Image 1: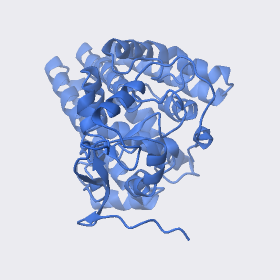
Image 2: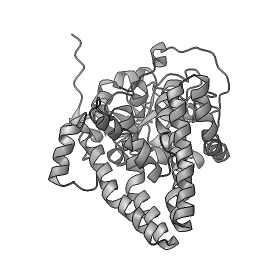
Image 3: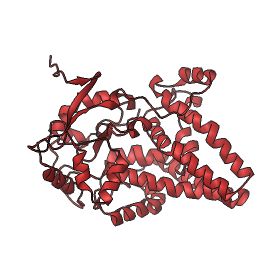
Length: 394
């Protein structure tokens, strides 16, 4: 039996590598995986005991209580506030509503929706269970500006199956120069305008009739709700619960995905260890269900979010062998902003060597720049062919 070597620890937290490229003069401080023991910070307050008891009985996986409690938090705060804005329309109240609840919930909700779409939140098999499992993308998502019932097709079916491939994945980044702001603007505009057509067309040409009906129905319901909010509600209500959230969440989603898939290896663009990267030891991981372990999520989208730190330690050798990019003490948005400001050196200073080839700081910057350049064509070469296997949601 192969037993992995013991790792140096600090307060029970294993050392995973060192900052810097590892070459002479580029060896920094020891890096420990503090995400392994960090306190979760997704849910803001606990529900009453009877709600917790009901959730415990009905959750598909008890580890998803953090997701369920966040959805409860949103239901008892954001929904009543939206009703208040409907009854007492005001642009001032609307601005406060939008700013407050997006600051509190937007990042948390997007990742709660994400993981509860990959893995069912409530026990399936009954009408009630299946209905509850669609609330995240049909009822909650529109509150944050995401069109009703469209997320599953876009993310689960398109993004994870086509895996950031240009002309297949609507949110593919590889054809752009990923440290160019103007390229990101083009990317954002394409998503804002194109998603209304490209998502239904994607399902149509693949004869996925169920998905086609879901996404076209979702878009129609979204547009109808926007019209109703304006016509039967008020301008402030429609602006701050429909139009501004749509612009804001589209921007956040596309900047987030752009940042996550900024570094793509031109030789192996389908290798899951080279079409994204990992960001560790940052508070965002405790607000986003460990979303920083994005390499592992693409390698196997069915890994439970709570398992990512442990799985990362188990897969350290694979990260090293496949020359994956790993950063510490920064989040995805920091990476995206750093790239817009051409601060490649800043990113090199946060790079973690977990066993990848040793490089100087200048060589790290050159590697990153290589993985930022646009790609419009390539061969089928992939030295890790198993990376092409798509994983499916249960």
